[in-house]
Image 1: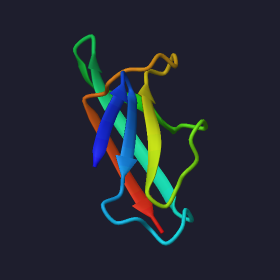
Image 2: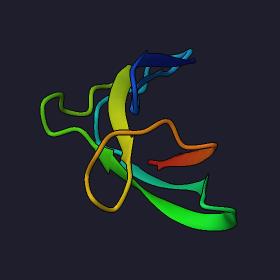
Image 3: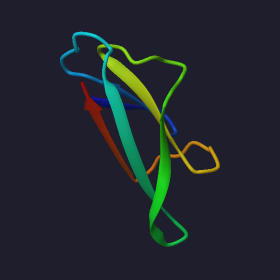
Image 4: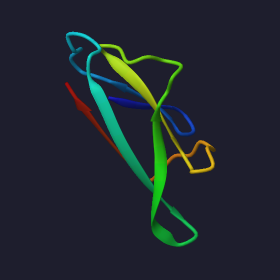
Length: 79
């Protein structure tokens, strides 16, 4: 599940916990700004909360580092 915990802040929780926290996360995002429909946003895994076997947190932001809710956010996990 994905829960929005604040502007540009999300927690992703696995339905079934993994065996451990040895996995990789990749993500991308996009938003509309000034009529441009293909602007790229920044997605980061938050350093405040480490990856666990059951969840992780991400933030989405503009290139100037202000948090924002991007229109499209794609996340993939690989183990």
